Length: 383
Image 1: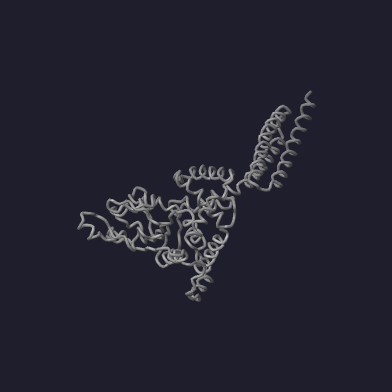
Image 2: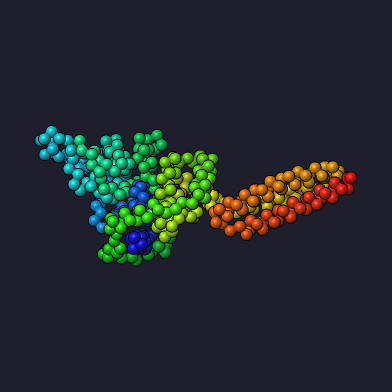
C-alpha cells in the first residue's frame, strides 16, 4: 500500500513539474479522486483545464475518459448515447452508452453550466448516486470524479445552483502570471513519456488509507470557529459542505504523507467554502485567524493589562477614587489571567508552543501584583 501512495506522489510531482502555477488545482484533482468528489475549474479558455484532467485520467491504468463541450443546444444523446433502434423494435426505450458518459471513470464537461434542463436531472443523479437510469434499467456507473469547467457562475436562484453545489472543490485558474514561468512554458517541450501509472486497485487502496487518517478534536473545534466567523461575515456554506470537508482534509493529509490532519491542512478548505471567487480572500483570512489567531489574542490581552495598569496609576482626585480604580483594575486583571490560562490550555491541546504565552502571563501577573501592592498600601494609609 505504501507503494501505491508513492506512485500517487510521483504523479503529483510530474503534474506540478509540467503544469506551471497549477499546484493547488493539481492537489485538488488528486483529492477529488481520493474522496470521490467533483471539482470545478473557473477560468478563461487556454488555461489547460481539460488537458490537466485528461492527463490525470491517463495516469490511471485502464480508466475511460469522456469529455464534452456543452451548449444550450446539447442534446442528451450527445452525453448519454443514442436511443437504441433495436430496443425500439422490442418496445424498449434505452440508450447505447458505449463510449459515452455512463461508461467513463473520469468525466470533463466544458461550459458545464450551459446544461439544459433535459440534461440537468440526469447529471445530478449521476454525480450524487453513481447510477444511470437507462430506460427501465438502473445501471451502476464507474464514475470516480466529474470535472466541470466554466468562465461564469450560475445565479443563486438559477436552476443550475443544485449542479453547482455538487462541485465540492472549486478553483479559479488563470493565465501564467510570473514571467520566468511563462518563459519556462515557451521553452518546454512535450514528452511522450507516460511517467508514473497507478492501477485502479492501487487507487482504491489509497482511498481506503485516506479514510483512516485521524482528525483530532482540536481540528473539529477550529472548523466550528471558522464556521462562526464566516457566518458573521455573511458567508454560509451548507452543513453538507462542512461535513464533506472532513474527507477532503483527510485526503490532503494523506497525500502529504501524514497519519492525522494538522491545522495547516485547514488552509485547503478555502477551495471548498466559497460560492463566489470574491469570497476567497475573506475565507483565507478567517482560516488564518483560526490557526494563528491565538498570537493576536495574547497580544490583545497584554495590551488590555497595560491599559489597566495605566488606568490605575492615573492622578485621581482623592485616595478613595484611587482605591476604587485599583479594585476595578484588579478585578479585570483576574479575568485576563483566566483568559490567558484558557489560552495556554487550548494551545497545549493543539500542540502549539506556550513559551511566549507563559511569558506574557508572568508579565500580566506582575502588573496585577503591582496594583495589589498599591491597593494594600492605599488602604493602609486610609486606616
